[in-house]
Amino acid sequence: MMDPELLEILACPACKTAVRQADEHIVCDACGRRFPIENDIPVMLLDRAVQEKPTDQ
Image (cartoon, rainbow, N blue to C red; front, top):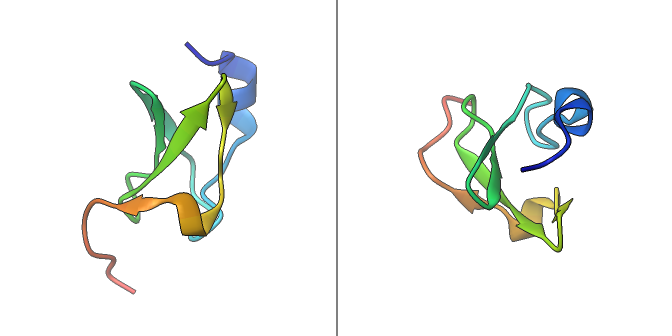
């Protein structure tokens, strides 16, 4: 589990909204991107994200 204080300050780099942890990913519910967590470090790079659902933008 990621440190709750770190998770609280993270935001999606694409849409700038809050994110949450789901298993080994950081998930943005607003745009549907999932960012991997590698060695307990969130990789918040757009080119590493997986799009789970289409955006409304």
